[in-house]
Length: 218
Image (cartoon, rainbow, N blue to C red; front, top):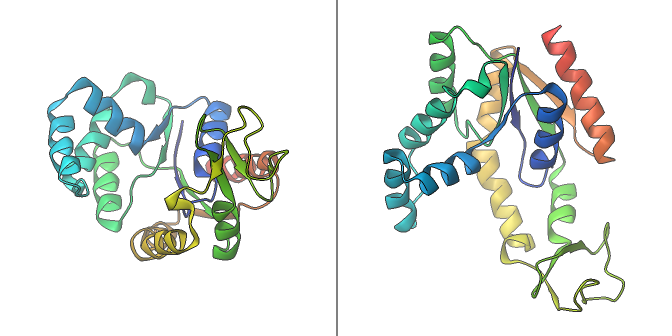
């Protein structure tokens, strides 16, 4: 049984690592984005409630998100554990999750923090370029196109998305530091936090994460 949470700033590679880790441990990767999409698609009462907020351009409130996550944790595939990614986003949600798991006698095993310096994240994200025509993605440092500013696949123009601009990234990092970083302290106090550097080769990071999590549940 393995119940984990993955935390880290935008651009730390959470999505990539979550997929690798969930596959390795044979547990479902549960991301709030997927839960939202599933509820919206199926038109569940919670999905419709969330849609009202989203249509008005507002953040979905904690109580709706909490209910969606709790509902997802009742599915059969989480019997052997889960990997939560993107939840909890704040200490209030962390408290709700703790109470819910305690009620079910299925406490968390570990919270893995992928830590990356802000400067590294800015370099990673601000270097991303996307093809205007076919949406292929490139990076000016790590995955350069053959011809500057042109897509290898279709020759389309490569653009920098608004949310990959440095000022926007800095703002996202500030929001993360303000809202999500307190969760790191919350789980450190609970004795569940494992913090590891998420720099270097993707496979190396995955191996490092697997070892750290195995040690946590041993």
